[in-house]
Length: 627
Image (cartoon, rainbow, N blue to C red; front, side, top):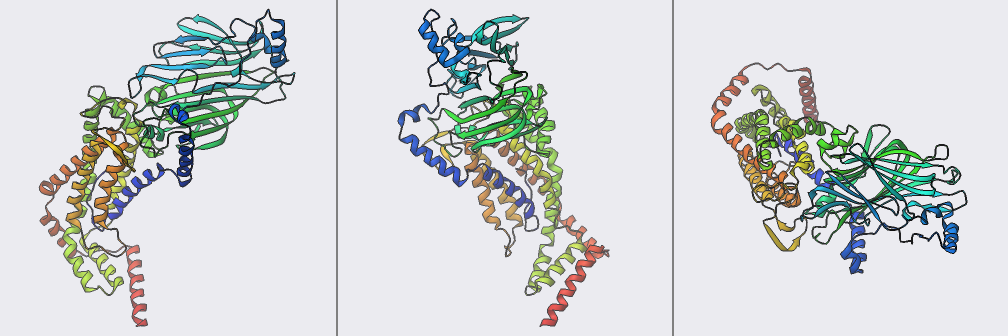
């Protein structure tokens, strides 16, 4: 948070920043409907201990895949009655639960014969919060990729229940895996994967050959993709805040579902869909945009659930897209991305993927993209990440110190005028109109703008909000330690509580405590020096002085420790700057002499000021006539 002097004339500035903080936390809180839904879900889960323990849904079809011995004529006949032309695929040697491994330096992918889809996606260079291998897809249980289609002999089939035949080949350094769902040796539906070295992106093609007379073109061919987001972070509830569906539509427009639950949200001309899991993302691209796509997002880990030790997955995602036939055949060139939600990596693909990283909208995102991300990347290139945060905070505060100085000078002027303002208040205590008129006249003569303390606050809001978005999104901070914090992207834990405090949690984080103390000291310094008698209708400054540190203490206890570290250092620096300005730079006697000199000079009134004066005088006259 950016700091400044506070009195009754600059409270608007603080209120704006304070309002933004409240607004952001308000957006992160569940609606009453979400709370009720979560309560109902917990009651249902509590009735089944086994489901609670596993906390996952197996997306693999519960139906039995048909496998036949080609020598068994009866079994082959039964298969044809159920699968029609695709009974051929059930008679091949590949018709069994086997997996084909393709990998590079970054990814290890297992593709199942059944369904032809990736049943395991391992990111080799990363670990979960508890130091186990990091999977986006594990054992085929948390993901499903299925094409549902009708056949010309009136059957409805699902690729997830059918067996594909694998074939691995090489094209230079690239590994190619062809998975074919065969009607015959020359007629098939093919999933083709091509994995390049040192890349999180792999080419993926869906095409058919010779199936014009097999697939019923009068029925919708539908693609369904589902994924349960496996928990990777220490705080499942915090991770869930940044876990949602992102997608691009109409060329280069993008949107996201948010952290709440969504059922069949629809969009047209969708070119990519991303199931984002805070710091890791699974993305499906298509060169031929899906004409329509519907999305479903279901919360499994509540954003308010702080006792989340048993949570295995955070959200359940689903996307459904109709596929268009061309000449009776399927032909879609696609790509898969399985990798980190790292701005630099995603932005390098030049496919609008940087929008998946929540850097803030408008000016806030611009500040992050073109200032904070490059600057932090530069600092972290030669400094430990914790020290990079400290150095960046110091430089940001130095850059903003002229704004702090301007605010303090304004407050110093107001402080010098306070005795005269008090005198006016006493003299015209029964005449609010006259009191306001004389006060404004005093400001005009002294050359003081009572709103000048508010302007610096407005100037600092973009920086404050940009940094609020930057730290939770900075992939570089993941699992990077500093002092007692073992992971700057998660909360620091100095004590584990034997119980859970509502809105606080079951642990004690030290950085939020230090930041809260620094905020309290700063507000005590500034508010205490400029505190006036509370006016009717004005905010209670003492209440705000105690509320702001309390909010920091409670809400940031579960946030990234890197963010709390920034606020702690920022407030310490601001306290230092304010002390230097007060004791070294600012001379209140000179300010007083300057004000007195300004008061002696004739002050030319502008048209607006003259008009306001006339209106106030007319109001006074009307009030006098009524008496």
